[in-house]
Image 1 (cartoon, rainbow, N blue to C red):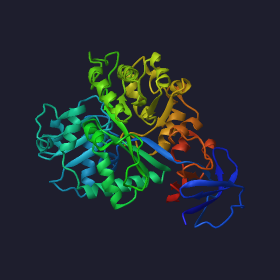
Image 2: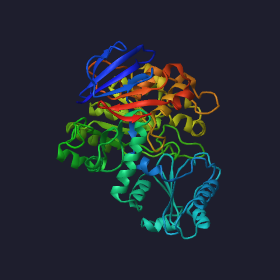
Image 3: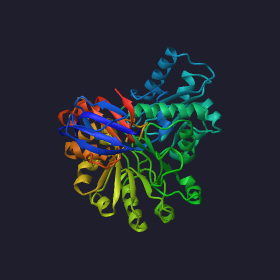
Image 4: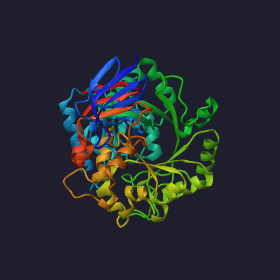
Length: 486
């Protein structure tokens, strides 16, 4: 019998105690505590915890996140030289084999006093193949041996944007079965944080990859499989349409949106802006001009695929909004980090989702203050978007930030993640709105709802942003079945 009784839970923020019955993957009843009727195959005691909709991370790179968890962390590096020191220190602590590819990740060079260069890696690790990924995944720093490994010759070994992505694909990697185990472990860890769904933006054939994975084991979360630009023809030929449930996975896999890049990123200084970057005459990088962008969007929409446009700089967002207006279709703008004031109300007017990653704001505040000086009042402008009527969805962009929506919720509410004052606190949003944005738009629990749920050990409405970030979870439930129990 697929039946679950949740005893002594508080339903919703500030809610009263109740017993909640789940049957066949849906909420079947919400009753007075102690009066839960009938037999249940399983009973879980919530111990007075708060029952909320399960979290949905709206932007994940699943394989890269799973791999990132096994790379040498470089996020504390404050210079290229320090990144190399961190790398060497970690190698001394591990059983590194001389022939192995050395892989590090998480560096942010936007404020470094020196520049990354292949010669630094060669001097530190002569002849070794070294690949270091930036935190935003838009830069790949390679040693001479690693360049040779991917068949490249490059003056600095620092590859940006498309060069970065194609070189990444050419690097040696673990076998698919090993990678699949890593991904399964990563999703189990996400489930322990209340996650019941992800949207996988991996730059790969996500439908094929996830079909293979679920044949081995059911995933710990639902997965929406994003279609990359290179696979548009394949998706159309297969009849894939955004939102369709895929045959594999027992209803847990679906077709996601169609992803296109308009520009690059802030830390790489390739986000496409109306104004040039300081000490440069470059406004960033336009990946797809409107003449190429709009036909791709129209073709996708005509075949049932909803466009999702990566746009970070203010000019890139203007181009993305103009493209949606020209194509006449709904969709999503991923990141929306810097916006022109006049563009903010256009999200609601065009029925677009602003898919945002609030955890990036505390990480990027110093880089934004330098490279977007004088414009940060409209950067990461979540309150302005919310007040304009836009729909927000919160993701992590893991591995750019950890696959933990509580980190994003805390940043959206508090606008800081350290002991510094909140950065542009006028753009903070209320907790209820942040939780809804991190739960796929769900604002509560009612009879008939899909039983993708979580029980928090404390009522989030009583906690500070710092406490939200460390939210203890009692249980996570996917389609009526526990995927995590504390």
